[in-house]
Length: 166
Picture 1: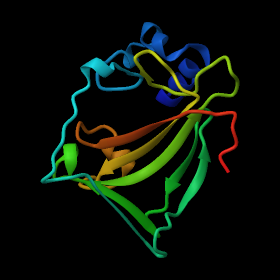
Picture 2: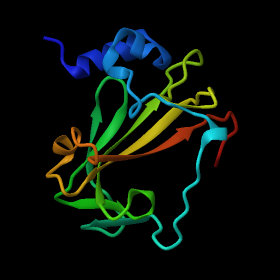
Picture 3: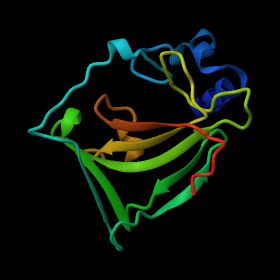
């Protein structure tokens, strides 16, 4: 039996992201990865009255506890919600509260392939970090995944420089 994880992993290993939907129709919809962000089409939504708010709560100020995971295509951390939480609300996500369920990093193993899932004007990057938040009205990340308002993901591109940053 082939699970969605198996399908996605086989897609990642066999095809670049722009070819996924040609082989697996599940990857051809408009509200999912991968996407190309076209800068000329980006709309900047500013809401000074309700800015995006991020709060970190835990046993120790500023520390977030979790478990290191490797799912075969990204290194990540599942948050230990019994010891800490990271919450966002406001801004373009509105009045709902979202809790950090995990974060993971996609990266390139060589110079031939870009590690990012998404692109900006067709340009890829060496890596991409995703912080996956789930709507707190659902019990957990697993329950929220199938809901249209279940997830909010903050993504960041990673560039590699030859210079030392220290």
